[in-house]
Every structure is written in C-alpha cells, then in structure tokens.
Image (cartoon, rainbow, N blue to C red; front, side):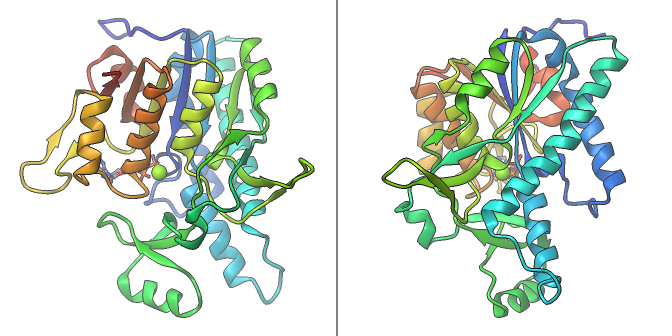
Length: 320
Ligand code: ADP
Ligand code: MG
C-alpha cells in the first residue's frame, strides 16, 4: 500500500497515449496487446475504484498506422478502407481490449462497476488548414532509407522528434463531440466510460446537418480536453510514455517540469520546447483546458498515475 493516500478527484478524465498502449517495441500480436491492455487496466484500477465519474480516452497512432500499412501491403487483394473507417476500426479494437481488461481487473477485485465503450465521432471543419499540411505522426518508426522508399510510393513521411520516421496524416482541430450526450449520460450514471478513442472519428457536417467521415486523425489530447470541459470535469490526467514534460528535451541542460502555470507553458511552447505531434498537442490541450475553466492537468507516465495524482511525479499544470 502507498504510505501517502492519493487525492483522487471525484470526476476525472484520463487520456492514455497511443504509444503507451501500443509501445514501439511490440510487434502487435494479440497476446502482446492483451498484456499491454491488462497493464493499462491495472494502472487505472485505483482510479476506477476511487473516482465517481471516470472517462478514459486513448490514442490510436501506432494502431491506426499499422492498419494503414496492412492495407498498403494487401491492396491488390482487398480494397483499402478510408482513413476515417480505419480510425473507427482502431477505436473498436482498442476499446474492446481495454474495456475487457478493465472489467477483468474490476471483477477480480470484486468491484461490480462496468465499463461502457462509446463509438465517438468528432466534428471537424472541412476548411481546416491541417488538411493541406499533414502533421500527425502515426504507425511504426522507419529508418531514413525505408522512409524514402515509402515516400516514393506516395506516403507522406515525417520525423518524430528524433525517434525515427513515421507516416504523416492531417490532424484537424476537434470542434465538438458528436456523441457527447451519450457519454455524459453514462458517466453521470457512474459507468466508467471509454470514449473518443484515437481523438474520435473525424466527420464534417453538411448544410442539412447530416455528417460524413473525412480522412484525418484528430489529436486525442485536444479531443480529451474538449470532452472534459464539455462534461464539466476539472481534472485532466494525460498518461503517456514519459514521467514529466521537459524543457530543452534531450538537449544540454534539459529540465523536467514539476509544477507550472498555463502562462509559463505557453511561454515554453512559444520557445519551441515541445515535440510537434507528440508533447506539443498535450501542452496545447492542457492550456486550452485550463483557460476554459479546468483546475489541473497532470502529464505523467502510464505506470505512475497514482504517484502523479499524489503529487510525487508528473508535470502539474495549473491556472495562472
Ligand atoms: P502518446 O502516445 O502518449 O500521445 P507521444 O509519443 O505522442 O505519446 O508523446 C509523448 C512523447 O513526446 C514522449 O515519449 C517524448 O519522446 C516526446 N516529447 C517531445 N517533446 C517532449 C518534451 N519537451 N518533454 C517530454 N517529452 C517530449
Ligand atoms: Mg500522441
């Protein structure tokens, strides 16, 4: 048992990273994914017990990237799915594994709480400038040589903060959560809700209000902040693959941040300390969330959720 009890907020949105739920070093077999989901569920267990309202969102970068690669290699045999459908596929697959793993740990602890996974669409603007400038890294990491070969076959490739080359796709701003009323109702009734996987399935609205999918991957951190605020949740916990946010990341005089204000983060962001498409959107989501009335954002390692809520680790971002 932990010596110091964590101060769990009653209402919390936890965003878990695509890279934390599908690490670089796994091939992606079902057995590996089950293990990763079980570990994530164990990490979330204290929150599932303590928080009266708990909404869990997750990334899908590595998984949707692998779906695209599979399609690419099988394209002569099977028609590829459009990117919005790939996002929906990844939401379903990850949501299935995560929900099952979460209910398994709850059941083992004799906790009758159930988990609902809500297929979530997110409205974006068809004129978003992101559509003409793909910026989101997804899928596996490639060497420079392999990246050049893939680029030659029509893929957009980008470097992901020194870790290697990845596929790049448009990542428009999330405007609103289409399935919000369902998420709100379920969370309000005490169900643990898994929602907005992969940032949500990107859709646009026609003049008559009807919606249709559009090819993009929305950043899950921005969607998570938006969803938390829409729900009136004041605490956002972003769990990823690093313990804290750094300035001068991987450079001389690197410094890990403990507690900072939104204004300080805005300043560091303007100085370019945060990786585009990785840490930068988390920081942006955090700042927006606090400006919209949120009380605290904690960015921490997936395995350190409880310690981070206790204040022992993580980067804590607070209003000015
Ligand atoms: P997730 O899948 O959780 O969204 P990402 O890989 O997108 O994770 O973002 C987390 C990664 O951001 C870290 O593993 C780290 O390599 C990278 N990163 C970029 N800039 C920073 C920074 N300033 N501080 C900490 N990590 C950073
Ligand atoms: Mg990310």
